[in-house]
Amino acid sequence: MKKQKITIALTILTLLTTVLFVAPSALAANGSTATKPNFFQGLITFIEQKFGLNKDQVTAAVSQYKSQVKATITPRPTLSPSQIQAQEKARLDKLVTAGKITSTQETDILNELSTLSTQYNLNGLTGTQRKTQMQAMQTALKAWATSKNINLAYVIPFQGMGGNFRGHGQWGVKPSVTPTPSQ
Image 1 (spheres, one colour):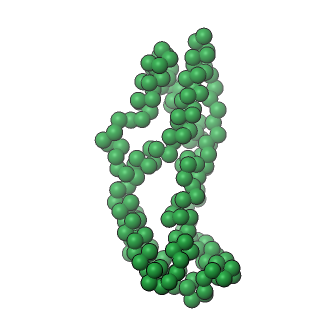
Image 2 (cartoon, one colour):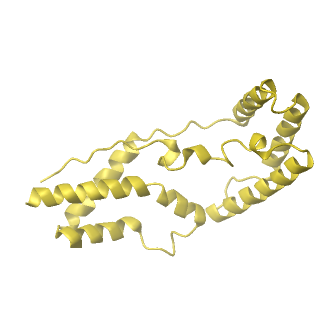
Image 3 (cartoon, one colour):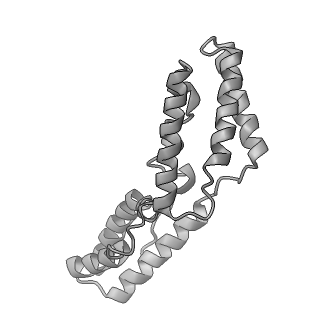
């Protein structure tokens, strides 16, 4: 019976942690972690009370799971500004080849993105400040694209930076950790 409780608790813990692993980075981006209680502490207390388990065992299981997940995540490589610009040029070249934008529009987009990247420096900012800067940059880019009669979908890749990575854990990787019951 005790093994079954632990297995159920670890299964619930695995599901909740996998689904909510994106939450800490989202909360950090909003700057709201200081005002809200720690999610994992609340989860530990809930599992302890729900299944009548020892809090130290549950805490150890959560820590072990977090370590396993972190070990399976491979961070994206950091790209230099020139590498980012080369990728953007390749993406826009494909759009020119497909006839979706002209080569003049491609040049205009590259110049505008370069201007905005120097105008809006995101280094050293808090999550809230970064969000504000990104919104300002996006607003400026939308206004610019409208004035140049360029479809915004061709200007902002990945639905406004990161749209293709949502829901896949940190760095766009789905964690693949299976809990191991302990005694």
